[in-house]
Length: 461
Image (cartoon, rainbow, N blue to C red):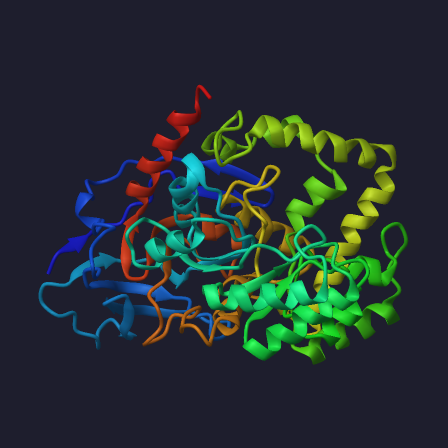
């Protein structure tokens, strides 16, 4: 039985709204990383670990979790679960094992940065990504990722979007649904610009062929009609502030309660993307300070094939910032109204799914989820509620595809090993000791080594 001593190396820790990197000495740990191209990952046991199962708000102390063939096979008290001979063990003493996180509104740039983006997600404990804008090459990327041929999260992919630019008639909308279903996309992505007849043709055909759809709310369609037609996810809280007429006015509580009930009764989900909207659409924040965030060293300064650079993000933010600076009180009210809507939805039992729309303006893949969790906390959501949105709720959303999102026997082995309890502070999710995806273990030393390489690559870009 081989034992691995897990020591945090360069864990990125958020405390409140601050992000800092720290380094510690680390024992040699080269044996902790199974080859990413293995047909099946090695069996691994986490011993004497505190498990945060996410089936309820609790911690199971001093447990052993045995992972084989990419699945959790055994879980129980450390003094009762025997680790089979030859199984690699990770000493989890004093640490916390929770399900991996999900990015439910992510993007998959191509070109030179495709595999780097996949790694940035994994490096931050993101083990599932729902890609929300399909393009050429994404089906092959999904295959490679889900087969373990590259270091990547589990991928679910929306097809090329339905918008005013891609659809010009109800008949075309219906055929586009059938085509994307036949091609094997996991869902349909809705963008602005659809007319009501086009949207309805899309929705009716999607229900007929059995493919889900979500994303934006076209202006002509409106939130209420989209809910009636069975749109499953509402990303960016799109349509909610419009429905409440709350861009520059306080929210009417009666109208908000009615909206929460309507969404809950429909069984719809929301993907808030608070930080991206706050920075990129509302335009709050200082562009130079945002461009100087620590995680920007893992993104190109200037645009390269497949990725807009930080300089481009800064220019785009400046346009939104001018509007916010012209009326900062209105910008603050808009942003705070979005937080109020999210808290009401959470309190009302509506399904919340964590997402950030990365990579986008100052949202670096993976790192952006830690920013998003802090924003969700500012809305008044508890650490447990926030973590549910990125773990168990995502497993429920994808329940027809696989079983994951909690730490339990039979679940897909997507896990994060942490140095502190995430139920105390969601910032502790960034204080990692390692990440497991489909049973493959990536120690924090390996993660930091690769992150350092990415930073060096972009240091002169």
